[in-house]
Image 1 (cartoon, rainbow, N blue to C red):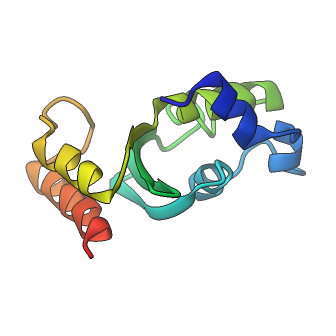
Image 2 (tube, rainbow, N blue to C red):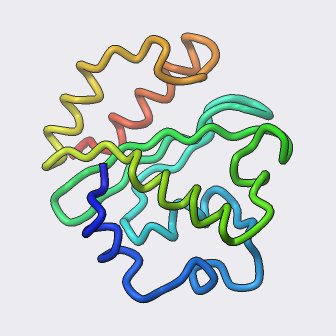
Length: 141
């Protein structure tokens, strides 16, 4: 979870308009990059709808985030944004959902020990296993 004071640090004096000039409908990758953290992994799991799994680094800390995506504005949160105000709400909500661990080893342990059943819409067990392998590989020395 991102604390309110950290949210202010991340956003600084920038507005959502400055983060996404000219469009309030960025791609999911642009959306994730706008957080200002190093993006170690940003991968879609699923077909026309599914989850975007994200692994982030902020100094020594490592963060994990899952964002659901869909095939249209009716079922995709980002495509469904019709104003900067809605995008700003989604952006702040996503920041608050990041799970942080203090270091790489702690994130690897958290990923390995977590009960993933029902936590995502990864679809098949194969998709889930592949996604988890991708996350762990991104943390490998």
